[in-house]
Amino acid sequence: MRMKEGFLWGGATAANQYEGAWNVDGKGASVPDHMRGGDINTPRQIDAEFDPDALYPSWEATDFYHHYEEDIALFAEMGWNVFRMSINWTRIFPTGMEEEPNEAGLAFYDKVFDCCAAHGIKPLVTISHYELPYALVEKYDGWLSRDLIDLFFRYGKTVLDRFHSKVEYFLTFNEINIGLMNMGAPLSTGLIKGFTGTMAQVDRTATERFQAVHHMFVASAKLIKYAHDNYPEVKMGNMIAFIPTYALTCDPADVLANQANMRQMDWYCSDVQVRGHYPYYAKRMWEEQGIELNITAEDEKILSEGIIDFYTFSYYQTNTVTTHPDAEQMQGNMTMGGKNPYLEASDWGWQIDPTGLRIFLNEIADRYDNIPLMVVENGLGAFDEVVVEDGVERIHDPYRIDYLRKHVRDMGEAVADGVNLIGYTWWGPIDVVSAGTGEMRKRYGFIYVDKHDDGTGDLHRARKDSFFYYQKLIKSNGEDLD
Ligand code: BG6
Image (cartoon, rainbow, N blue to C red):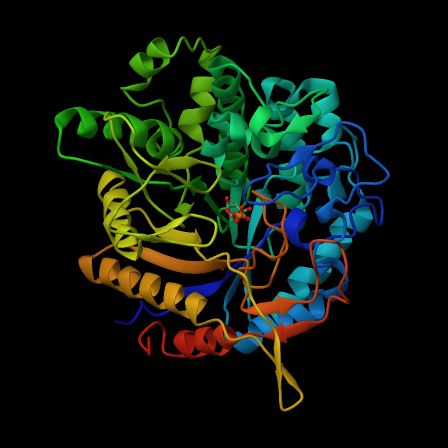
């Protein structure tokens, strides 16, 4: 099963989890810079004020800032033609409120994009990936304020004006639907003004969460219209955390509950971003949850003028939904969800479902008239062990290879079904800080980085077995899965 000619193969990262250099060359603090590490049982702590004795994993992360040439050369060695990365908002506007951008920040990304070009790799740039300036939290309570629409627009316009000739593909917001949940408030919407506590303790009303996401919709659409009007060669996409669910049983009550869950979690945001208006079911959904939104006629106009060119999503796992009591719960991507007896799970409890990728690629294609699709995150967080064989460091990671093989196989099936899939970027192709837990030992990479949860490690890089598997797979354009 081969992909189409020109299929985009690569990996995906986020500045806050990868770059480090958190206060270098004029960069300001963003929300993740205020977050400590946790683990599967310990939610991450957010500190309004820095604690001098605490360790903040994003501060150094795996230091792409000082290793970008070495890392991009390794990506090229794997055969990538696309690299999804994000721009750190606070590198360009340190507080988010400056009138003029920080030239040193822009210059860093110029160097990164030039390095990519030298290796024949196209950047796919997320403009905002969980990197809200912390100063905007302190002043505005994040995206709760309408003022952020214009502040984001100034930042996004600066990025487009500077980089439109070096970057063809942009995504406005990473996993915009995560902001609908309390769990997503710190990283996505920044609804944490004055808050110190854990991610699990954030408790904002549904009206606040949905209003914040509404402001993000308008900001996204406004920037997309600007891009379309000024840089027609650039393609603008959305990004959804696609966390699909199945009804646990064929009890119609379960099927109905699952439909409601899928609408709210998976379809609501992209229905707005693909179609340019809220879906027909939104009104009742809001009413039933006591959500009252301030949506102006001008907002509606902007939404209708800023629809996306391509749809992208992350896909890690599926869960189940039931109305029956005592269903077992599993962990997931910023979520909890019902256990599925037919699936196995990762060490962090995320249920592995390659067939689900085929099913939902078809569902998305079906709903949106076969719009170009890209899987911009998919991957397995796992413990890795380094062994030294003949003086060479080896990381044998058959579990990661198996996950990759099965997901690419089912992606190939979806393409054979007729889905217009244009690319695939594995999440965390080099080890980065986990967003959900802040850990280093939850590793996704094909490239190992010597960095540990206690902050130790000399940051040297080593190729895992999966590095060579992905290289072979890309060379055959997805055909050689052995
Ligand atoms: C997605 C995010 O939610 O999943 C990434 O876009 C994140 O930023 C990835 O890292 C994997 O989640 P985690 O919690 O294992 O890092």
